[in-house]
Image (cartoon, rainbow, N blue to C red; front, side, top):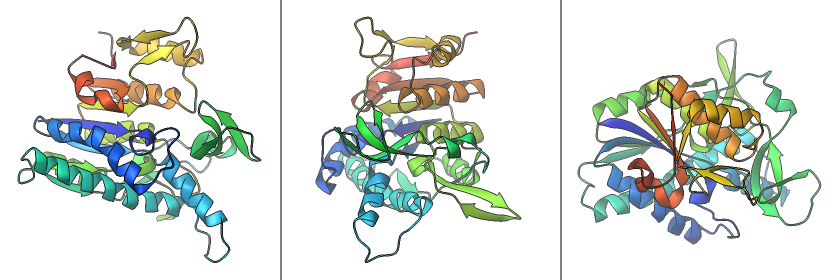
Length: 304
């Protein structure tokens, strides 16, 4: 079986305009996870996921009271790996039982930490939106496509530390692994010791790095739009069913894909394909299965 990495965006759990209740998140997860369960018949699967809404909410909860000690952002990222990993596992268990694969497929959430460069320019230029979006300006918040949101540093992932364990599970077969939650816990290494740093790594870039390290075959990024587009939300918007790596890089340089939304997704699939990946797709949460058979989404490909 080929190894497929599916990177789920934050909207897999919390849709725009929702409160983000536990019930809403479990209900929303059924859409991608039911498709992933079916795909487990054909692929060894790794699920990665974002945590922007969840980690931002944890920050707000901390700020709402003085009764508890404050935890740094990297600890909150670790908390969301457990929180969202549990929700994905629970939903996946139900879906595998529904289609009769529960005896054939095992699943596991891997606590994942990721090496970053302490001198990464991203620490001086926060761009990663987290938490809820507001319709009116707030101090310290910036305007994004979804409203005014808090932004935090998002350094580039250099290495996924648990790649060997994840690759071994893929080689064994029969496993669905949940990894790189929220992009992974960002760490730096000094004198043979790892230290967490306050940041949120982009989960798509982390997924591409993991794919490179374990030599995955396919990377699919599931987001809130069905296809990649240029001139987005204008009268001359152009959607792509197929997009070559050179053209993707050209549009990226031209600023067609913003840093806080489509930009990291395009960069992630380009990184993946340029380091040996076979196939890459970007599509909506609802169209995961269709994208893999060419019926939806954008197929990004290397030119021969």
